[in-house]
Length: 247
Image (cartoon, rainbow, N blue to C red; front, side, top):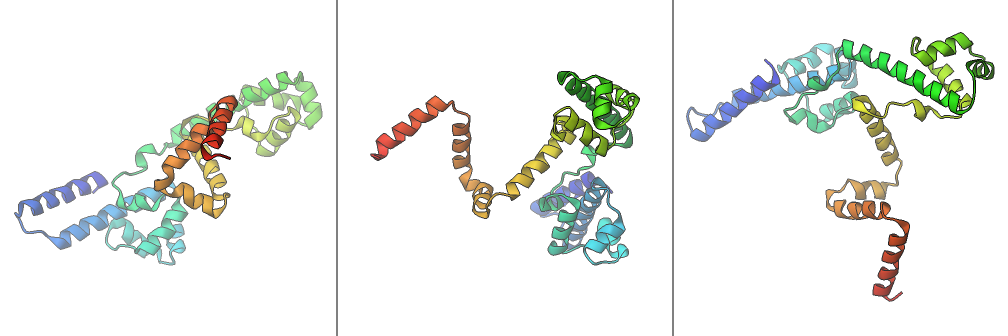
């Protein structure tokens, strides 16, 4: 039974309750809700590429107990779901929604295609940065102690660049590693989102609380508008505010 089937049956049961025929079956309603939660729990685990044993260990349960949650035969508590949401990197609201992550999960062939494409893109970026610095392949090889033939293969995307070598090559062509990062597509968006979340968590607590409160969205939009204004216009607004306040 998949999530769409469970959701449809719950809607049907709700409609029948509203029509008052037949009588509302509370036990069936709870059973369907447990099944739906199980589908979402399994979906989040597969999306995070975690094993049942790993998740069971996080919530201090046996693998059998955890598996019963995914089948909907038993149901975890909210604190247990909070731990799992953190471990599986999903918002806690995922577990009371109706949208699975499976549709957005790339398959093995898509992952291989992504790695091959990114390998060629990184090679092209390396060549571009090398030529910008006026370096030949031999000169770059001498500066990095990496074989010239290997660098040539890297630039053609024929061979993946090991991370420790990419770090050295980036320094030699006067670029940091962010120059080579993916910035578009789903992976790029996820990486950017995680970096943004990292910087958000580094803000003082009072600023995080202010930004996270939906009531303050208007103030944030005003600040964003100011940040995008030309400096001269911003100065005129500042002068006008001083005139209004009398300072």
